[in-house]
Length: 288
Image (cartoon, rainbow, N blue to C red; front, side, top):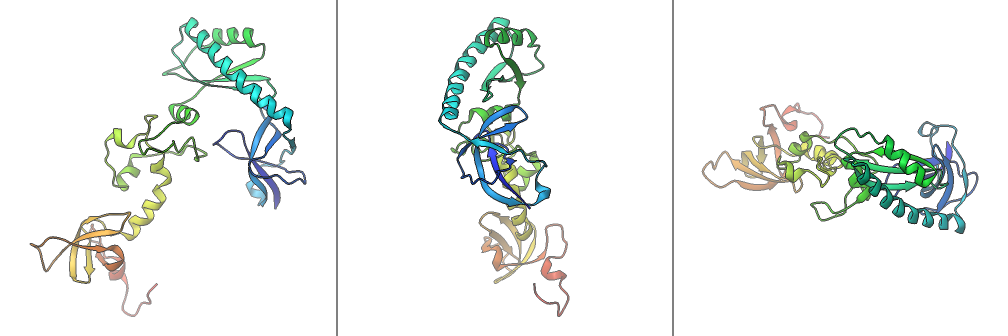
């Protein structure tokens, strides 16, 4: 076991482990650490904790120090510089007539590098732009092309649900999302209804999928044969989230379907005609 603290460098994003060096840190505290990009100021996202050695990449880099007033003032100054650099870069892009959309600008904490994030439909030859920016800022310049999902994460906004984007509030990493997930969750396959503001399939389809898969295992599908308190019947409609079922009873084929909850029925045959769990049990088999 190894003692760690977790540090983030953005409001959302990956949490990196560092060695606390025998000191205690609280969540939300600013700390100065050394990273692959140089010295950075991050925020403690996980306080002192013991984790398995397999969960870390040794050797852990130590925390240099808690951030002091001078460090916090440096962060504020960097934020001011980033706004000015954004304005200048947009002017240079227009002057070079490049088909790219500047999204964000980031100064490293030690001011050794400025990163410019942009989106574009294809590859962009920005060599002259880099030279132009380097002559203005007199430091290392890096232009990084990002995708539309990363753009939404950086800029933030409101989704069609009316809430802030999941990617810009609590999702740490982007996960692959498939149209199959929308089908299993009973959603309309209209791209406009299952796509986020970024134009890609909504992230919530992925992180809600485990819950839907669990409900699919215990909820009879349309066409399944079930035993209800009022007799045998066939499921004609089901709601995964509420567990409500509409069952057309065999004894009342011309009547309206009866409504039941999934816990009140027993599955005899699934929609494909295979025996349900109750039918598979042998006489005398113990209940789970």
